[in-house]
Image (cartoon, rainbow, N blue to C red; front, side):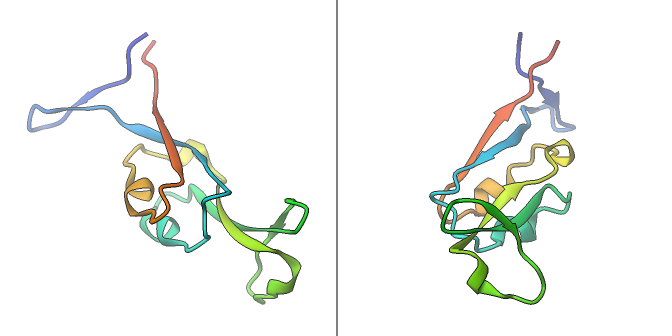
Length: 101
């Protein structure tokens, strides 16, 4: 199978690469990726000292978790623009191309 490729109006070929995973060890939860994604793909969560995910609320009670990390909550909304990866200061993202049938 080949990668799914689109021909842009300029004639240039483009292969969208979709958010596949985020390395939680490297992620610092800065939220830059969240701000550039307008597709509701990402969600910030807290990790407790046992590595369990905890919802981050508006009350900002940081005592419940060790750190915040970004997660891919709605991968089906990703359009493959890679803006999240480009803005990430820690290069946490893995993207992959969709395979054409």
